[in-house]
Structure formats: C-alpha cells, structure tokens
Amino acid sequence: MPTDLVPATAERPAGSGRFAPSPSGDLHLGNLRTALLAWLFARSTGRGFLLRMEDLDRVKAGAAERQLEDLAALGLDWDGPVEWQSRRLPLYEAAIERLTAAGLTYECFCTRKEIQQAVTAPHGPMGAYPGTCRNLTDHEIRQRRDEGRPAALRLRAAVTEFTVTDRLLGEYRGAVDDLVLRRGDGTPAYNLAVVVDDADQGIDQVVRGDDLLPSTPRQAYLATLLGLPLPEYAHVPLVLNTSGQRLAKRDGAVTLRDRAALGESPQHVLCVLADSLGYAGAITPSGLLERFRLENLPQEPWRLDPDGLLQPRKCP
Ligand code: GLU
Image (cartoon, rainbow, N blue to C red; front, side, top):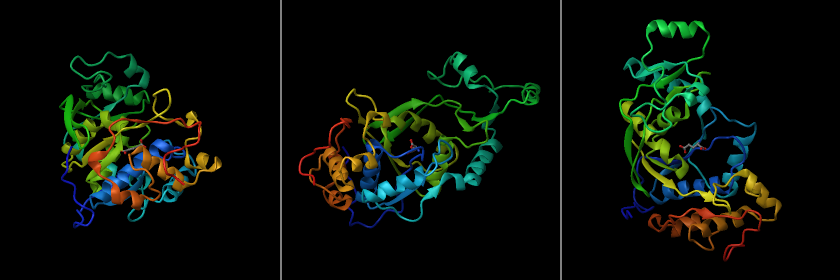
C-alpha cells in the first residue's frame, strides 16, 4: 500500500479531488460514504475538494439542492461554487469537435435493440459496441439520415483495452469500445463529460465507487486522445445490503432524511460511516481527518442492515 501521502500541513498540490453526484434522487448511505472518502482523500493529501452536479440526464427536480444540503449536514465542505454540467455544454462540444477534426468520431444510427441483437465484434470486449456503423459509406449515412434516424456520435477507438492504475487496486486493464460521445438526443455522454470536466477543473484525484472501475479504461483512453492529464484514480468498495447486493433506495431507511426520521442525527450517521472505515467515535469530518490514514482503508465492502438502527461503537 502506498505510504507517500502528502501530510495535510505540507504545501497544497495544485490539484483537487471531487465528488460528482447525479441529481437523480437523495444520496444514500453508500453515496454519502463515498463522498466522505473522496473528501478525506482530497483533504488528507492537501488538495482542494470540488463538487460537480452531473445533471445532463436523470435529473429529479430539487434533488441537487437536497444532495448539497445533506453533504453540508454531514459536515463536508467544498471549495468554490458547485459546477453544473448542464452549464458547461460548450466545453463538451469543443472536445467533440477536436476529436471529429482528428477523424476520431463517426455517426451511429443503431437503436439500442439493434446493438443488443448484434453479435459482439470478433476481437472486441464482451458487450462492446459491434461497430455496425463504423464504416458506413457516405451514401449509407445519407440514407439513414433521410429515414429520420437520430444519430449518436461515437469514438473511433484504436484499441480494445487500456490499462489504468488505481491507488487502491493497482493496475486494472479493461475494455475500450467505440463509446458514445454524444447521444442521439444531442446530450453529451457521461464518459466524455467526466473526462473533460475533471481536466478542465484541475481535478487530479478521482475517488468514486468501484462500480465505475470498468468505465475507467474508456475514460483514461479518451483523456489520452484529447491530450489531457490523467488523474489519480481510487475506486472504493461499495456499501452492500444484507443480501450482498449494492445498497439501493429500496433497501429501506438509507438516506440522511430517512435516518433523521428514526431519530438519528447527521453527526450520528457520520459517526457510523467513520466506524465503518475503522474509526470509532468520530463525529465530525475534521475530527476524522486528523486520524485518517489512506493505507488503513478497509478493502472489503461494508455490509449494512438499514432496517435496524445504526448502532456503532461510541456514537452519540
Ligand atoms: N455521476 C456519477 C454517479 O453519480 C459519478 C461519476 C464519477 O464519479 O465519475 O454515478
């Protein structure tokens, strides 16, 4: 495990860490624990900490504001104003234009169903886009446009795999396919937006749930094509329910507001989250930060029974 962490007292590196939720509903305990970890990683290495709302799709009215309230209630702080992806569309278009000018994009007219039904490309990774529209002639493209089919824009990837280094998991080699850059409805795709934003915002540390690890080789490859620096990645274990599945809203009382209705304060919830990381008795993020050591992070997912009261050791 790496031990070359910059102490919080050392001069601050230029970069920042971040938390980038999608405002599709309230954050649950798994999201809050990841946010806390992202904050701890950033602050314990002297970095800034930024919040970015990934509000290009799956937006629920009022959810972003509630998420920010909950993060603040937990005691997390962030630097500068919150960024909103929906206000950054020209940046994504500029990146798409650069890729297109370099001959690295193509229009894709496939429906979801067509992609599912197509066999995977012979040398491509499982589930990868089979490349149906990769080599359409100008005539075929015109035909499809004339049929009124909406076109997504895809990356013309020159590799099928890419290796990234994860601070916690080491080297990870994973699939890269002709990923979507702009969807058929004109919305920039998550993989593009995240890469553009992290670089543009000076984010050099990406801490997030390990469910996103499989997307990371695609993102790192895309960043490389755009000539953008790669951040340090750390994918942290998710919170699981009692059946060992990723925690979800339907698992019961899993949000800060659900817990408040059971009489548990945000400090109590923070204390429970800290306990799950191996730090009993911390009730503020800054108290936890003083004791936090990246190398002691549990490698196992945290299993949670949201039906019961959260009863860790030594919490208020
Ligand atoms: N917005 C993504 C999510 O909430 C996270 C993106 C990221 O951290 O890279 O799942």
